[in-house]
Length: 116
Image 1 (spheres, rainbow, N blue to C red):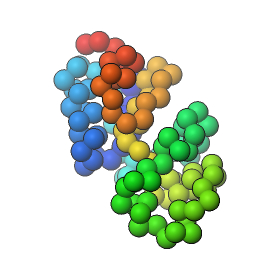
Image 2 (cartoon, rainbow, N blue to C red; image 1 turned 120 degrees about the horizontal axis):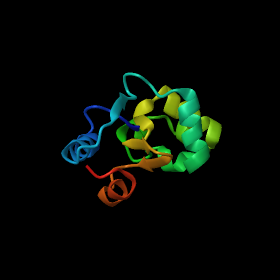
Image 3 (cartoon, rainbow, N blue to C red; image 1 turned 90 degrees about the horizontal axis):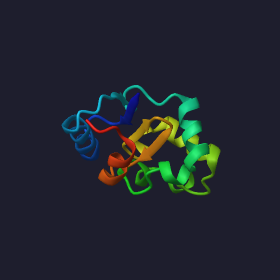
């Protein structure tokens, strides 16, 4: 089963979903802006890849945070921020067969996903 997590109106998400569709990959889309990300799943991602790989510090959502909330991040504080503001999570996050990919990288998708 392939699941792609992200925000429906994100340009990178549109590219990733278009690629999946064009290559006949069946997937479930989870909009974490409207549905949130289950806390256990987000924690597992952080444990596996580190919060630095998941937290989008370049986006508007992060830049709008007060400096005190941006500073001194570590696992628990970063988890709390991403839970409170799902828009802080990089996208897309793709889970497939034990693989976890962050961002849209055609080469990584080709390597991990089944051929259609």
